Image (cartoon, rainbow, N blue to C red; front, side, top):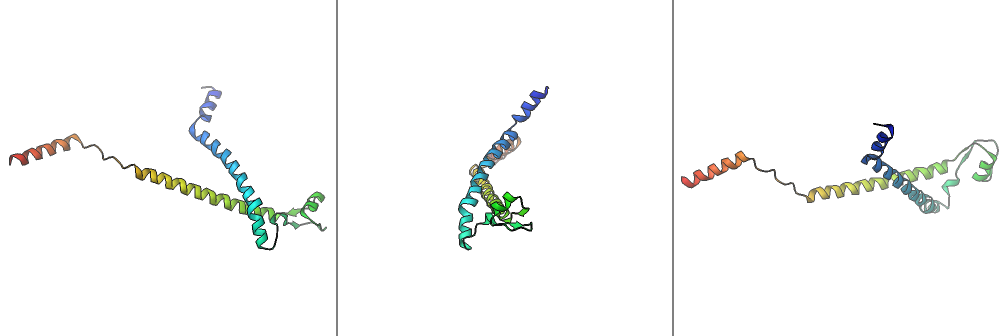
Length: 142
């Protein structure tokens, strides 16, 4: 088997295709959740705690002071941007919770599918059928 045909067989297996689709959908889902955190949730949380924007929180490790995060970044100061980290941590928690809910829903739907299909009883073996016929015939005679 040639290298190209081996790769084609690998790439066309169901698991690889499913993984590729999952990665693409996950990337799009990540962008949606990122926007939800940055544009919807963080302004509300910031407003509730006094109009604070977390993304501008940083710790300046240099001896100079700067008026803003942007000014410190332009100057090339060493920074710890813990506000951005906080945004990303909240983003992760929301994504993990959304995936948890999605998996729970899929499991529930899968369980409902299995419950709807009653298991068919196994076919009766021929020797059991024959013994029942004999029993019934004996009951009729005696």
